[in-house]
Length: 257
Image (cartoon, rainbow, N blue to C red; front, side):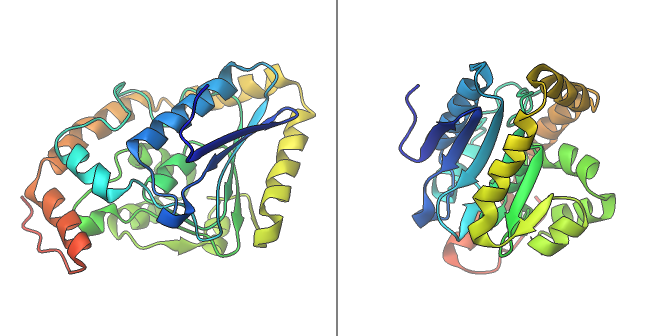
C-alpha cells in the first residue's frame, strides 16, 4: 500500500492508527489525501489481524478543517465527485470494524463529515466542532445532513447546519457528539485505552454489532438525496461567490441564485 506523505498508517498490535499529517495547512484535505484515507481504511478493513482503527491528526491546532479550498472549490463547482462516485456511500460507511476518532483540535467542515463516520470519539479540551459551509454559500455534502440528525439532538444538528457556528468540546460532550473530553496530552492514551478495551471482546461479535447498528439506520437513500440536491447548490452563483469572498476576506454578497 502506497500512501501520500500526508497520510500516516501504523500498526500497534490489533490497532491501526491513521494520521492526517498536514499540520501547516490545519490538516486540510486534498483529493490525493482523500484517496490516501480511502486506501488506508481499505487496508485496515482487509487485514484480519487489525480489529480497531484510530483516526487522528498531527499537531495541536486542527484535526481537520475540511477540503483545501484552493483545490476543492473549482472541482466541486464543476461537478467533480470528490471521491463519492457511489452516491449510496460516504466516508467509512461500509467499514464495519470500529473506528475511534482522536480529535486534537479544530474539527470543522470535512473534518466533521469524517467524524460522523466514526464510532467512538475522544476530544482534546481545546477542540471545536462545526459545519460552516452555509456561511460561504455551500453545503456539507459528505453525509452530514443524514448522519448528524441521527447522532445528536435535531435542534443542535440544525443549528450546526443552518447557522454554521462551531461548538466547543464540552458542548460536544454534553450532547453526545463525543465520548470523552481530555487534556491534550491524554488524547492518544485515552483513544488507545478504548481500542484495547474493544480488542478484549470477540472480533466477529464487535464487527457484527457495528454492521447491524449502521445498516439498520438505512442511510443509503438519504445519501442519494443529499448528493442530488447538493448538486443544485454547487452549480449556483452563490457557491462561487462564497469561496471568492472567503479568499478575499470579505462578507459574501449572496443573491439566492
